[in-house]
Length: 616
Image (cartoon, rainbow, N blue to C red):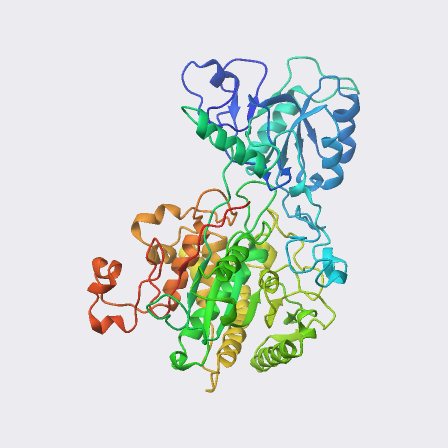
């Protein structure tokens, strides 16, 4: 038996009827009388690239086994050696969900599946199922370019990375998000399955079934070929795999001309950050430090810069860029570089004056923000002069702020960053700003524990949701200070000559964004800035997992927040908004329609959503 929608089930053994009313137990169905569905779970799913498959899946009808609770490593002996009733379904304590334990379970036929309980509080030793060298092989460093820096030879950026997300497991693994449901399973185990005096318990036993079957196997190439054959020869073709699809979001400080192309002589500064995160379990990716802290700071800097009175006079334009899909081999930035090279983007690589990237900025020690540059491209004298100017402007912009900018060092390579994908195309002066000089400060990179608590977000007890939305946390103040420094530096870099003291990021705006992107998307501020017909995207708990649905909630919301923070309210009807030729001349001066299928309004510049970025 299995549920129609798939997922885990607990099978109480001793009597017919609903022992625990966790799911829908109605009617006379035998299945409903035997099984108790677990409703708040997240599966580990199968992912493919050009050469490999990673992740997890069940057999086609699901996998079943006798439940055994593992709360310390010694409990594994019963599962791996002593237990008389294999295969076992393991309920694993979250603190034991590590590479050493998982490889033991992977190497035996006595395990049919795994349910992982969330560890609360987060594991103090840290937990990252990502790689020690994120996106290894897809950045700029290789045997032909800075070989001494390739494969993180100089710096191991994510030392706690276990690589679990990149292993292939042939049994299903689910996360149990609800502590009450975890307790239900434990109680069933205590009542029926606990070994007595070293001997196995007698039947009937409490069991569990996990169902997460996926048809995709081997590699992207194989899966695409199978899908193609299905569509060619089957009356009812079945798609056996889906590409990871989404959009990049971008906007410019100054308008782009009506041709949709930047003048070849116009210099543009790119400010970039990523908006996606990842974890071992599908759609459980809070990404507080790995993504949200950076793109919220980016948005706050964009707002502060747009408020400057003379931005329309600046010598250089600025493009605010938010890349999606960077977790998987820099999908978003790779697509943008490709389109620029093929002249399919308003901007060309030749237009890029410099590149500034925000990359994990919430966990600063002693208020230090580190400036990382590429030592290989700096060997070029012209690039070195421009990079030194960029570093000096950033350092000078921090004067009087509670932010100290320091250079990571000439011999230090770039951390994993979107900037690396641009450097693969050409030498561009650029800097990556982080809160770490070497290894990540983030001990929960690409994991379910990269939560608001990880970036020290704290609220007084007893606040209502509306009061929490408006409460300015210390984290918000800290990120607003970083945004202020970045905005002032961009102003100077673009040729601004006026005093920058008036350029100031708003901590209250940062607080609202942190609350919306990390705690509750369905809040009054987000409701006020998006179209009424898409309010369904405002779920309660935000996640920033790049997936096959497109666009994901994060992409939509970054798009609308960017428009709200940098736009100007104009008196237009919907018809005029969608048809520029019908716009009154008095309004055309500050408005033009960006080339997006959703017609995002970015009045002072030209912005939009980039092209779909499939994972190949």
